[in-house]
Length: 128
Image (cartoon, rainbow, N blue to C red; front, side, top):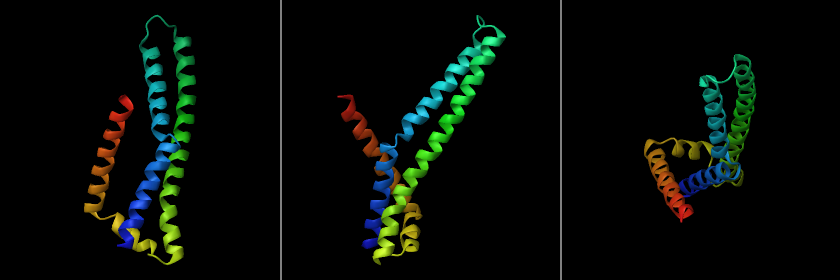
């Protein structure tokens, strides 16, 4: 019973950190930069120099966004490891046991479904 609880804490820590460090808004921002650059590339009213300037600025912004997404995702993964490492240190369960449990197909499916349902429920609450 200890291993599933630690695994659930790990998943919850990941989701909380993913939300707190704002990985999704960073990704949405990167998509917006890409769309702006592509619309400028297709804009016939702009000169080639203007298009080039916008594309260069967009590429720098995309590189920064990529780095931000990677760093934020690493923080979320580190947060997910915290309950596992603490449980291993306290002798409640080994990290191998927890990782073996987390990599089972049924556990992955349940976690994905529960996360999706939770996200949809929260999205409905935020709309109101």
